[in-house]
Image (cartoon, rainbow, N blue to C red; front, side, top):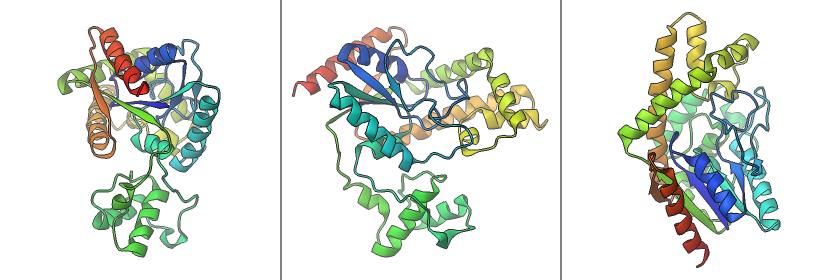
Amino acid sequence: MVIVITGPTAVGKSDLSLFLAHKLNGEIINADSTQIYKGLDIATNKIKDTEGIKHYLFNEKDLREDYTVFDYQKDARRAIDDILSRGKIPILVGGTGLYINAALYDYKFEDKANDEYEGVSNDELYKMLLEVDPNTSIHLNNRVRVISALNYYKANGKPYSEKEKDFKLLYDTIFIGLTADRDILYYKINKRVDKMVEEGLVKEAREVYDLGLRSKAVMTPIGPKELFDYFDGNISLDEAIDLIKSKSRKYAKRQYTWFRNQMKLKWFETNYDDFKKTEEEVLKYVNKMMSK
């Protein structure tokens, strides 16, 4: 049995995962595309105290390295199989839905992109894909998958998103989604950004800025690139922080849309005033599902 805990940013996924890991003899696999990398701990909101629970796929790659969903699929399945072989429960935790689906369903990925599209920008490729597959769930920066979807349409005359509906689940899985009232969630996101700034977000981003790193790992998370504009003198620090808050709220909205369209989740409301109630409610549901 595999357990998935997902949902938008700032909704309590990490706390719930630790609780379930303690209760169910579990180990945790990261399913956040930005936390794979070493560094940017504040910007990517990495867990600070693992409470003795084994964690996988955190701080695995250097910021200069490229890491794709194809890589994650292989690494996550290896971790799942290892955890299961020792009689423990793998718990996938994070907000990158495509990573979760890639690990658990029989998604097929090509290791290399097609040379036919050499020189075509990601934005241009994505526009081409939207023309033939407006319901695609593929991210515009996932070049390999965008090209694969374009090639699939050329070969079959139908959108790749239609094929995705037929993917098979490889593991018995319990899918948990945490949610919250939108206004409360946005307030929590704003407060989280304030706390990140207090903890040294600006200093962390400055160190990476001074190294001249502009890799996908650096430019994908919300935070560094907005502060880079501040370091360049294009905006004030307050404007950069407001941008981080605004983009984080918009990201949470996009996450909701993706989860509701692409994943079959059992949703639980986060009780911020008494999170123990949320934990016990989820545990009761998981135990019920595991006993079937």
